[in-house]
Image (cartoon, rainbow, N blue to C red; front, side, top):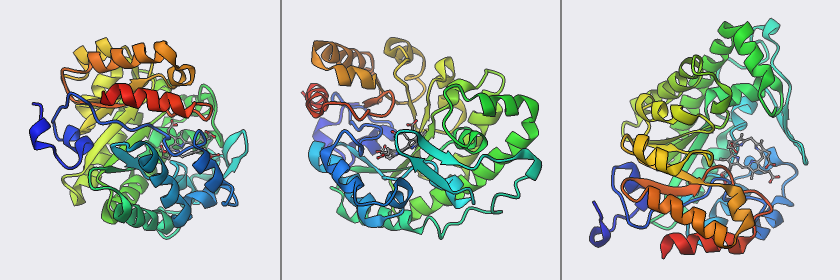
Length: 347
Ligand code: CP3
């Protein structure tokens, strides 16, 4: 159905409700980020990245910046997936040019490093930012909350940092699957509590980032990723039955169909390595899809960028589609290339 004459208020939310548009709604993962000069300026005002995430003033400002500049169809809360381990008792630090660092969990300690429950007071500034953002957003902008999926967050808690192939969490998942399962169970509960508060504060929909789906085997993706995400979605819907979810299982290949069928999601985020023509045949008939332009095509720009943008628009023109990149925008992206993509999408 094309709803050009009955334009709904929030286009992206409408796609999650089953509508399709000739010109898909668009937002970009990491749209508040270092490629924007106005972001870099605000960034200097915070002592460190985690304090930035816990400052309602600064978080509100940078969430709104890309909406003002580009008029995206969605604003995503400015925060980080690692505030959850932080609020569970594992303090997180961001080291310049190295990324996040936390004290790795020690299985011998049987979770004595962690609080029994997520400290929602510690996360209070995040909910305050949501209330402020909510009151400042244009009516047509969908407001997205988010969390990391348990496996992705657990991987940081196990390794204490980002690791290219997730060796520490993969080895532990083979050696001590019960421990990893118990950690994931704790993160399911923490995520439900956290997302319920985001919903209460006013987000319209939620994206779950399973950034490390690609590190799981076919045997384990069900129990460590798909099932925990399904439990989170079900858990939030106990209190917020109409809450909409986008599930982004980065690098999950053919398992994108399982995220569509088994999690309760309303849309599936596709990473840039997925062939849009394949996904249009296999994933999009199940659920609306989100994606999936290669962020590096946007760094490169030019006619190649146009060609890749057009291929995605065309492949997904027959069903529900939210235009996005296939992973976060990178700091070296020229702003005029972002404008070029938007012009192409909007016509
Ligand atoms: O998308 C948005 O604009 C919303 C904000 C957001 C951030 N991180 C801000 C951020 C969201 C949704 C995230 C999610 C996140 N954080 C993920 C999942 C998505 C993905 O990228 O796969 C992951 C794995 C993290 C963990 C994380 N946070 C890493 C590895 C890093 C360092 C990488 C880097 O770019 O420096 C961060 C820091 C971070 N989170 C930045 C931003 C804008 C950059 C920090 C800075 O400004 O210096």
